Length: 438
Image 1 (cartoon, one colour):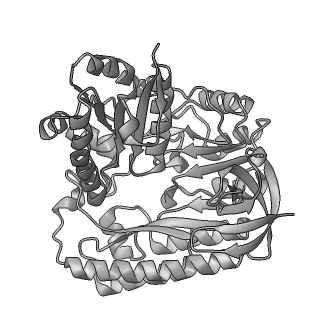
Image 2: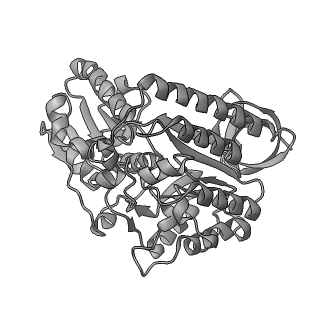
């Protein structure tokens, strides 16, 4: 089997990053190895995101740019997967005639056959929506390659139907994997040298609730914590309305569970939260934050915020700013609202101008940058245990993450990769910390 070169680009969330890892793993069995430059590739795949309008536009611009590579290399294959592919389907083949294959979020298992067909000149789009348990049986497994940390999908889809969110329409309804399959996968990862697992789903907190015969998410975490070789457990993403006391208790009595949580609020205004169909109030959200910090002092919270949602008044926005100050997020993923086709909010009247939305976003980002830097600087002088994951930002450095999720760069050789090391934090920047080996 002759060796072929794959260039993979991933847009959007960690779910897409996980899917891309599985795509690379599948195609390695078909003779593909990854390269770091599109000019060196025999095939270019884009794994796309359509949660925000800006992300979708970025994909379209990238596809336009790829036409140049196709002109230079007529045998080059170009494919599009992920949420944009699921949403647009055959239209992508019409809009961009230089694309060879389009595969939706439930069709990763078809990719090897689609690639073989594309190599023979057959263009193809597969976006069948499999909205039942069968899609988990088709989920491609990871194979080969050393990894320090690995994503483990515990559930797919979402039942919440937030008024702004396209996820249920491109990922489907909520389906939980069987706990015994998840545990078996983690055991296999541990045997291959993986030290940390990140449990992944659109709303991991509701794992097992729709299945009826599966344990709670908290119970699943406890099972995984009992697996030898796994030193750390993280999870994402959580929905505040499903943040149970049982799950919060895990942060106290499961030492392997890391002291960080991604808990999106989306807004600090009850009026906007109701319009978003989020299912909780700011008071409930702050109660969950208090409970987490009482249970695990020092836990770092990250989140998401949407600015300029239809109907957001100056007062609503100020409540969001107040919530950010109260929570003191370690980091925040924030963006201006963009309507997504088919969602309830796409029909809401929107009287807020673009300039005003952008001004609000810039104020929010300025506040969050200050908070992030303050939090990062508070680590200076502290001792932290780092799981070393790979090369650092500079020559002679390696990089890893502390229990709290912060990235730490330190002087050290590649022999440290995959090891837990104790460091003292000596410097802090906006996006990372610097440590010295103790």
